[in-house]
Amino acid sequence: MKFGVQLYGPLNNMQGEVLEKLSALAKAGITEIEPCMTTGPILGPEGVIWPADWLLAHVEEIRDMGLRIVSIHVFAENLVQSMDKLKAIAEKTGLKQFVVKTPENSTESILQQTALNYMKAADMLETFGVRLLLHNEAGDIQTKIAGKTAYEHLLDLCMGKVGAQVDVGTVNLAKVISGISHIQKRCEWWRRS
Image (cartoon, rainbow, N blue to C red; front, side, top):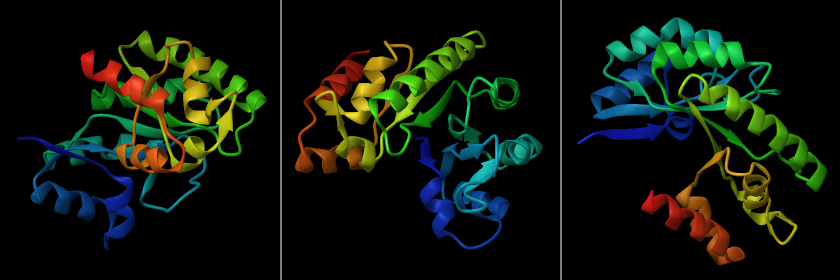
């Protein structure tokens, strides 16, 4: 059986250098990982959000540990402008998806601009066999725009070009807070696909 983990939590809570932490996860039986990466300045915990160049320099070491990068959460001001770096990473790792999030403090205007960028990036990524997914967080589930969560509204604005990566913990929280029939429908569709 293969076990994978999104690395933000483990790397943020473990002691040691990044490669030591990854080695410990591999020894614990983890085989697939989903790291967080930035194409610009690090806007989070160092060692948890990796610079793209660091990842490119360490792909082989990570692979030699028995870890396979299946997708990457990308923090980039503009995905389209970062496309050359994303393509290099996809080719070197073999991953099939990049994951992005809803912008903080979302408004209708911000979501429309984000959707245009994400759709263009999704089209570009598709040319080399990679898809773009949108990951939800608590804030975008709690924020309502046009009668839906900001997360759902952004997915709708992306017109099917961007897929959903649903965080089950946040979805369960959202059920308690406000109900999420639209996300539930997406999950049901996803299970059938």
